[in-house]
Length: 328
Ligand SMILES: C=CC1=C(C)c2cc3[nH]c(cc4nc(cc5[nH]c(cc1n2)c(C)c5CCC(=O)O)C(CCC(=O)O)=C4C)c(C)c3C=C
Ligand SMILES: [Fe+2]
Ligand SMILES: [Fe+2]
Image (cartoon, rainbow, N blue to C red; front, side):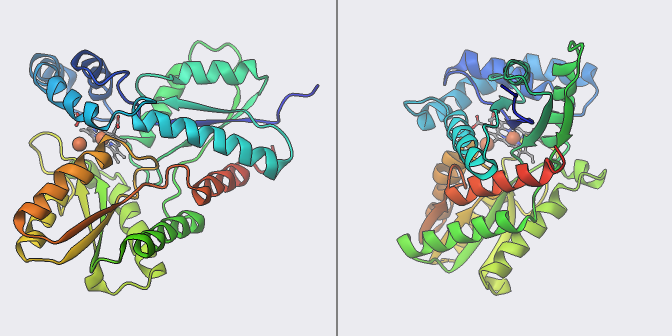
């Protein structure tokens, strides 16, 4: 029996193993210890991380995780598993052969080492790495690249590798986002404004050349165009600020507070940087930012779910796999 022509490694950020302070502390220690995420000199950052942040933040963040935790665990991981099996099924049909698909997380489990070994055991010698970040950022996609190299470091026989850098303007991605908005409007009513809220990064990183805000702007513009929105019917903001320095602006929370205070009758919120719903959407957008808007005097607030395991999302991932494995 011949083995598959290649395997796919889907990669997302990672999530704690349990909604407890100790599990969140382990997760944040690994995540926030990565230089790609926090670029400060280690001698300056590690005492702050271990002496202050990892003492104060985990109990509070664990409560937020507990509020979104499902029967099948953390939403990011549970949805990732569904994306993995749906993609495997879709590829088998589209390509007429079984293609091994593994899910890995940059931080925590399942690790890239585990995913790599599973692909090796499946007999593949070529791996397409597909980070589930539509917009490139050195803090996310760049970190996947570093961790991949580290995971493969002990390997005496490297697989052949290809790496999807971004897909922020892929027509099937734009089409799936626009369709998810249309379906949401049809099912729940159309609000007067559409807010595209992206996970932020420090402004300094963008000033130093991270293309992330350019990618976000292009995604928003293309989706707004596809939906035929006028300039005053949509806006783009950044959420999830961390620490004291300036992050990309405008900020989601300040914008929603201002719109609430103006008495805006309704807003739909979409967060295209997340391929799967997670803490940052289910808690920060669904609960925290809804509260800011409503308390300030705003009307209806409706969050439009991430693409998750929608069929058009899986079709997009299958197209990316086909495009990037040409010739394999
Ligand atoms: C300097 C800190 C951070 C940067 C830069 C950053 C970039 C970034 N993150 C995502 C996607 C996700 N982030 C998530 C959680 C999360 N992010 C940070 C900090 C930075 N992110 C923290 C500290 C946390 C944990 C929660 C908290 O303590 O507030 C998640 C959710 C994971 C989950 O388990 O649900 C995702 C996904 C992107 C796309 C991005 C830059 C483009
Ligand atoms: Fe983050
Ligand atoms: Fe957050």
